[in-house]
Amino acid sequence: MIKKLLKSVREYKTPSILTPVFMLGEVSMEVLIPFIIAQLVNKIKEGCDVATIARYGAWLFVMACVSLACGAAAGTFAARAATGFSKNLRHDIFYRVQNFSFENIDKFSTSSLVTRMTTDISNVQLSYMMIIRTAVRSPLMFIFSITMAYIMGGALATMFVVVVPVLAFGLFLIAKKAMPAFRRVFRKYDKLNESIEENVMAMRAVKGFAREEYEKEKFRAASEDIRKDFTKAQRIVEFNRPLMQFCLYFNMVFVLLIGSRMVVSGFGLNIDVGQLSAMLTYGFQILMSLNMLSMIYVILTMSEESARRIVEVLDEEPAIKSAPGAITKVKDGSIDFDNVSFKYSSRASRYALSNIDLHIKSGQTVGILGGTGTGKSTLVQLIPRLYDVTEGRVRVGGADVREYDLEALRNAVSMVLQKNELFSGTIGENLRWGNPDATDEEVRAACRLAQADDFVITRPDGYDTWIEQGGTNVSGGQKQRLCIARALLKKPKVLILDDSTSAVDTRTDALIRKGFREFIPETTKIIIAQRVASVMDADVIIVMDGGCIVSMGSHDELVASSEIYREIYEQQTKGGGDDGE
Image (cartoon, rainbow, N blue to C red; front, side, top):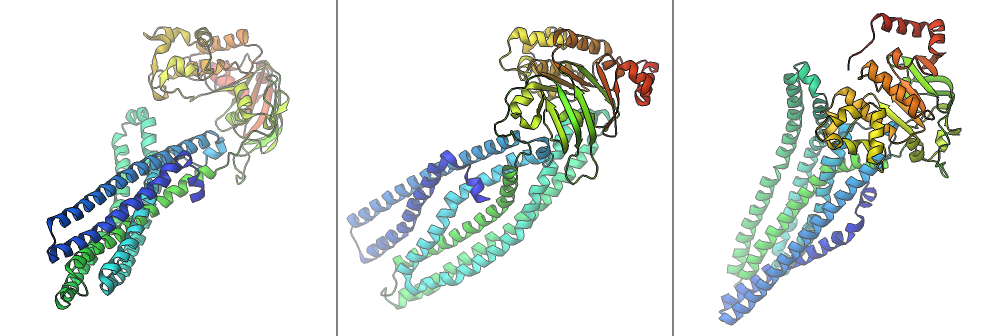
């Protein structure tokens, strides 16, 4: 896990190395200062002149300045290294997620991925800074202070050997008790973020059903649950302070009592006033370094769960990759399903698609009808290889989709979903997702074909109109038409509309299909719809049920031969259709 994370240090190796180097300089000066002060105290006691005091004072001033400079440099390099490390780590996770297939993404919820890229990376960043700075400083301070304490106080320093294990054992127990609560908190963050995400995304539904109070209570309960775990963990960790104070003052009292007795009875031969004052300082440094080590232990243990969750994403191998020597050009829009069966997981008990044998010629218009859960969307998601077939094969342009370079295949296949997303930015920027190099005229032509140009030009800013995140400031029908225009800008060989005209009226729907026939006759068009009117003029209409193709033919043929199709057709024509937007 550590090896995997350290790969993200990259160009920040130099500040990561310089931080402990400067830390060594700072600690050395801090440990030497009490030694020099002890010498000065003894000189004063002996009745030295002002020049001697000035000389020692100058040395102390220089050492303090060096310590300050080293500390500032170490802090600067540590901040640069830690923030750079977290930037690279965030970059690596985001790029990794971009290569995930739907199968990979299904393993991680959206809220969990957001938590990993924010809270978890912040925890790991803090830990990295602690490792290269404090985790170097504290052991060095401990070792140097113990050494100097024996040099200055001799046998009296053995007191620290007694106190240190007691303090270390107590701090270990405190950290061990606090860790389970910290671990629980990070898992609960996912649930909290998921609740926030759901609430924001479904705000209209929340207000429409007047469920604001319910959502507030759900959020309050999740937040309170996290607060309890954090409070429990923090309450345990706070025992560090009284334990530390007890050991510190016990040590000071012991050193003062025994040390003073030695100074008085030994006439300064065994230990002098200067050594005694240095011993007190070194005792404080030793215990403070142990206290910092305990805090490092707590933070590292907290971050261990975050690091594990980050590495889970980094270790996740994309389920779908481009084959070696992959085909980079799609010949045409012909599509063949050769005895295809598919299930979402190898552990799934049933197939989402079974025995699909379908052959579509390039340029044909194919309609797909069927009830909810019959496998319509699953079928078309196999074409751009969003999932891989379990059995059989899917061919586009005569070649198995697994033989294509993924980018080449997906550039040749445009999908427009019923809930396709618009992103924050102008209308023009959103449309150019389909083709970043599209000219203004190409953008307008695609919008005219998708019946979107009329409402865009009525906006005060036209194609520079700002779209809010998710397209919340345009209607459902307008959003769908913009998404269709965006897909058309790719100039695809295969265009898939997955119930993506459900929010437009039947007249606009008919105009869009008419435009397809007239202006992109060579593009294969697959239209999934709930309305018979949206597919009745297709070259071939497919009726699906239970993950299988149960009927296939023209509108007239299916009215005569398919009970499912005829029932849908009669229900919709007798009901008068759906003319609302």
